[in-house]
Length: 148
Image (cartoon, one colour):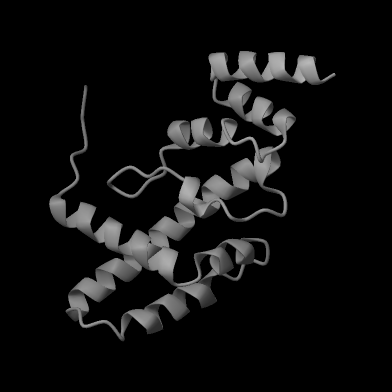
């Protein structure tokens, strides 16, 4: 069975709005709270800020729910990738690639991070290997050998 999911235009629009809200309302604070497991307080803060917008209540509720799902998606991604590249640097929000339905495009995001020269080359190499980015892994391996 070859089933495909085609998100509605409403879902795509709501995801874009929710992503914009997360970018605006201290998303870096949410990410740093992953270490403290204090995400619920940040989501309540987002909800309070959303009440200030002139949107229908149904729309606000749906956007809050989608925002929560996006935060959980980033948390899952963060939990897996922190060993590869994050460490103390939590400023990765603008490098995450998203599908229109609100999940992270992990392959494209990994490609972005493996090309980021601000990240330690060894960590980028491990990330390239984890995602089977053969060409990137080979290039990084050659660069590491030249440095040694």
